[in-house]
Length: 93
Image (tube, rainbow, N blue to C red; front, side, top):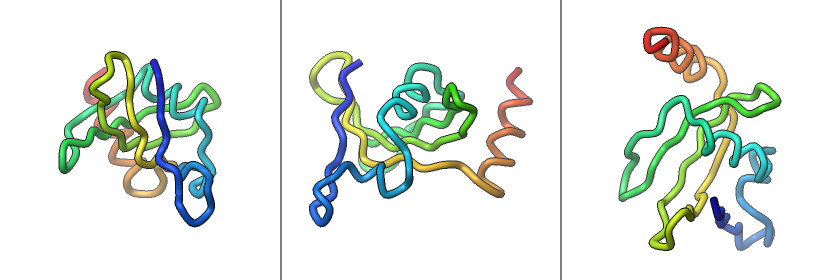
C-alpha cells in the first residue's frame, strides 16, 4: 500500500512525528486494523496495534489512486480511549 503523509508546514516534517509515531507503525495498523470506520468529512479512522505492541489511532483519507492512502495524523491510544477499544475488541473475539 502506498502511504502519503501530511507534512506540517511549520516543521517541514510529517505531522505524525509530532505524536512520536513513524511510518512503519502506521503501516502496521493499516495492514491489520482492529477497527476501521468512517470519520468526518470523508476521512477514515483505523485503530489497531503495531508489531511492537503500541495501540494507535490513524486518521486517513483513501486516495483516488488504487491501494493508496493519505495519512492526516496518527497517535497513541491511552487512558479511557484505549480501555474502550480493548473492551470492544474483547466483545468481537
